[in-house]
Amino acid sequence: KLTPAPKLERYPLMPIQQGIYVQSHFEDGQLAYHMPGAFRLPAEADLNRIQQAFRDLIAWDPVLRTSFKQDPDGVYAYVNDRVPFDIPVLQGEDQEEVFRKFLRPFSLEEAPLLRAAFWCRPDGRWLLLLDMHHMIGDGLSTPLLIRRLDELYCGKRLSELGVSYLD
Image (spheres, rainbow, N blue to C red):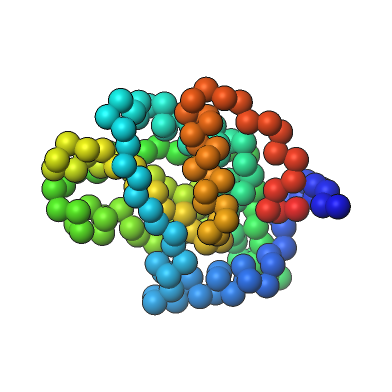
């Protein structure tokens, strides 16, 4: 049975994370481990509530507050107590240009390794752009993240996390 890890100042990386960390520092790997997505928002979506849902989720899940730093004896994961998170509204009419502005390398030393932006398309529909680094997520965790965001947006409280990716 998986049990919570003791609270530490820093956590060792798994071998796969070590490889991703190294590859992410090469020029051709700077965007290779990004997990971007775009979600059409309903017309009645409350952008402020979406932003608050993200902030609440980041406060709830330590993985979303994790950064990675090179120390003299290796690379370690650090869980930050708090991280700022704002969702900007991107300007522009050309989708490729907007996406190029949005997708940029993360600094693995600064949490969160997650970003979001709102964009109002020329047809008036709003999109939520989302990008997460593979160091903190994968194809299985992304749908969970979206589901938890939806629950928070709808006013539900998340139960205590119990164990997380760090464990």
